[in-house]
Length: 200
Image (cartoon, rainbow, N blue to C red; front, side, top):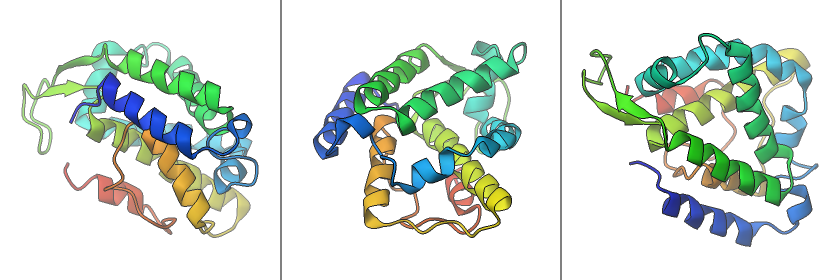
């Protein structure tokens, strides 16, 4: 399924209705997401996240055919986290604006798989706004952030409260991703990646 602009706007409208204080955005300062993502050490996991993202043939081909990652990997890394952090830490207006911006950029990225890769056959059509690809990238960022936090802090992964789960769902909605692939509780291992990699 390709996420259309209309899909995105429906999800944004739903999130807007659920947010109680637009000034603190989707999560807020008391959330697990702020506690984890504020750690500068998370940038140590950038290489892992990038490599995991490239494990999906749609992402790998999109990067190869459309991105400046090969010539400017640091720039791509910075742009990715600028957008993610704006949706995590920004007020609602910033998160909404970045969600539309990411979708608009992705809408121009499409092509074909150049060779057989796993379950994907040569000639398969891909689009950056294809839901499976969006889900995979989000899962790699989530999994990497949790692992780095656990390694640096020496703590187990924090439990999610019902409020935190709803807020995480709100960020997924900004990416217009359905919730079927996501765990209902905080994964204790790379469960998110394992679950999302099944179609591959």
